[in-house]
Length: 532
Image (tube, one colour):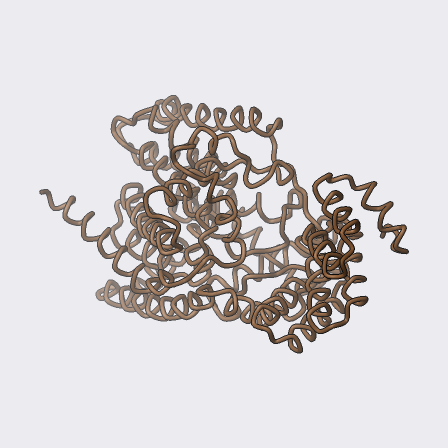
């Protein structure tokens, strides 16, 4: 075994050890929040049905998303490791550790700098803002998209890269999550840097090989067309998930820049991490004339300028800027509105650029301050940051162990979010604490009275506490919203059965299974409830 091989094994083992040290307690966690969508499809997601899984949308055609690789990874989980959430959490930890190792390998290979590679990988591993991706099973899509992109870049840098492997890695990245499209422009930057460092080939020789990436990405889009009937993702969301979808153009941009500032702040000052930023935790900005929007403009400009200025002089800085820009902008709401206003998982891919920048800055400052002993100073700073960040990430991971913890945390960090308050109310309801459930659900309605799931849950509280007519009105309300909550049909049917009104119960169930919106509206109108 060569010294280089020993070094790689040591780095991989170190990544595994640190990931399990920081996030090991998540193995005791359950399926929480959006994870439950995995459980709901457990009978469909079986590896023996892999052809069916590969043709499934993620999770519905209406969502306009196609992520077959992520779904197949869930199918493998169910078939090999069983239905326990432990197996899903275990795979997430392994994917995260391997991604950290691949980041080390990429920086080490591209810049021949062990200190920069080790520092960037260490910071990436401990960054607390990654806790949502690692501890939340549904974060698997983010983990896989970056992992396959890193494998693609490393294959590109080999002395004799295999085109078929690049096709697979490119398709697998896109098939994990659409954000992997950032790998195309980042790969061009990697090619440029490699060619300038004379990695045995010219840029155009690299480019010829890299054309295999386009084959992989193109194959994904054709598969997507076959399954969903469209090349491009459709964005279907409500005011609750993303108010920017309904905001004027300039207000949307100003708010998106505020969110950028928030991401940068929370990446390195990890207090106040939150699982929910939905309406109205981040109010739509009235103009650009506020500190957060202006800082967002400045940050975006610095990344753009930094990319071009340092492309030849300090390519590591340029690569860092490219990672951030190309991975962040598509999910930023700057180009077009996406499905949510903000989410810490969205900056997972782009945070590669942030940690490379941070590592390069620490090494640069250490050299200037203490040139003879800069390695000790830089190493000490990295270790201190790793301990602090690792501690914060460990604490944050506890919030994802159960829905009670997660919803209580979200209501604390996002008290103006209708979804956070509604979810906490639902948690109280399930515990039988109807007084606090009612309090939280009414608080949610004061923020926004059009969140149909929260309206339905308040109806459940009224029903359990003997206020049947008030409950019925809430269920009616939940059905007349722009995004009606289907559980209200079932609740109305069950309430009718309790009242021995079998005809009404059958009618509600018929309306539910028919999916006829006009029939639902007409039936509600007969009960004195008009369309909203």
